[in-house]
Image (cartoon, rainbow, N blue to C red; front, side, top):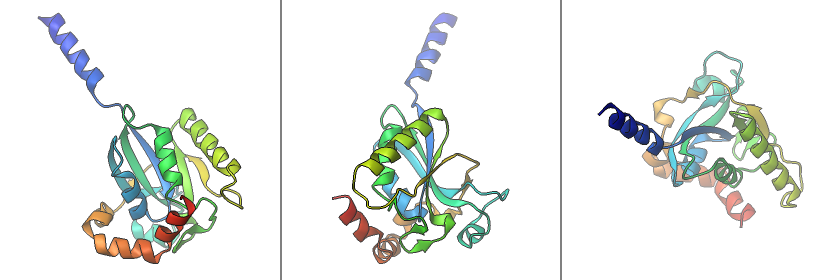
Length: 189
């Protein structure tokens, strides 16, 4: 009986999702959350902060540029369904990769684009995808997106989570008014 129980428990472990996380800064975290959440294989996309020197982060400090953190989205995903490369492709198609001063309406270091890698494999994939985009001839300027080692993730306040769903009208107005919507339609045809 012990052998059967062990084999059963072992098989359950093998059937569990290969859950991983990836973190991306693409300006407004509401927009990045909205880009990743609908993808098949994405378990969740949470708004938060990463990369600063301060020992904690909150919206006021980050948005004022006082903590050194970036607004990011942390994506939890099943790597058996969606690959890290697929996430990178989604990231690139939801930002302006040549804007070195922020994204669209949001200006400042906290809104710059950044890929936070967790291991050497992610770092290599991120660098290769950036190089491929740079060599594609799609942009007339250098790709400004940074590639940095992941640091502690600080989850954003609850009112920021799923903002694009909870405040759909305001989110749509923001996305359109910021210029993000028009840019993305034009840049990635």
